[in-house]
Each structure stands twice: as structure tokens, then as C-alpha cells.
Image (cartoon, rainbow, N blue to C red; front, side):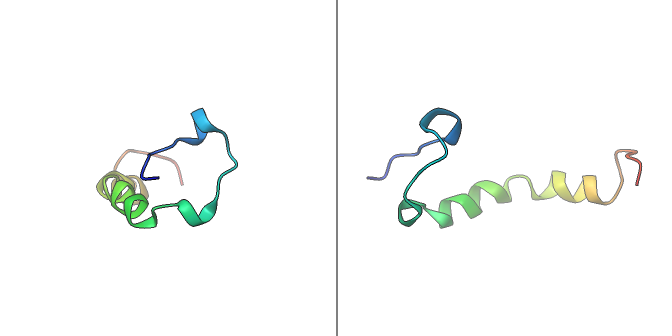
Length: 47
């Protein structure tokens, strides 16, 4: 149906065939830089 739904609102059960995986991949790419900084230890996190 082209609508964006969120688990926190709609609930965890959904038809997996309706998932727009291309959209998920694009949304997750927004965080690649921050994730890499975290993995590289630039934030002083203990390993």
C-alpha cells in the first residue's frame, strides 16, 4: 500500500512480503559514518 509503518506504533507483526528492503537499506546508510566512528574507537569507548 506504499505506507511507511513503524513497529513502535503498528506492532511487531507484519507481512514480510510488504517490506520495502530498498528503503530500509537507504535509511540505514544514513548512519554508516557514525557507526564507523564508533567501531574505530574514536569516542573513547572501552573495548
